[in-house]
Length: 142
Picture 1 (cartoon, helix red, strand yellow):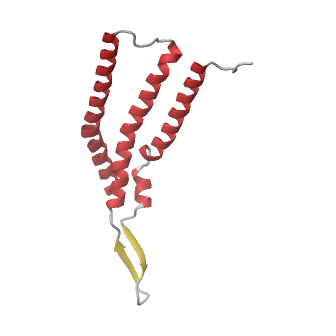
Picture 2 (cartoon, one colour):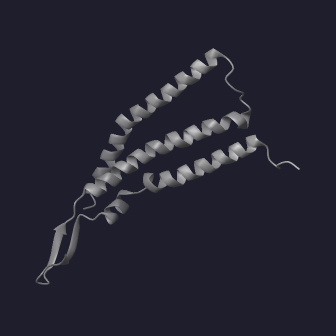
Picture 3 (tube, helix red, strand yellow):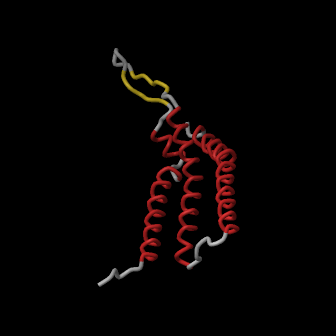
């Protein structure tokens, strides 16, 4: 007795699992709100000194800014990861066939290069924009 599923169905299920994992991982970073970052990395820390005097010390903000950067990068990466896996799933799902001619192969390579170009442009333009916007919101929470 054979498998109750075809290999193509299992490929689709595998891609769905990849998307679910990518979304779970990406959302952990991409949806972290500035308020949560500020909670995790306060601007000051209060404690007691040698003479049991209540003191407040500024807390380094590099960790908060690193989390802001990771959030922006995760948002861009999540879009490309989910989009790429969805494109992969389209092949067996809609029986799109394979690349049979040289022209089709060249077009596929050109499309792949275009995707990389979009990723670089997103990295250079979107990530700094989102990072700056989130930093402004985070700094307003002091």
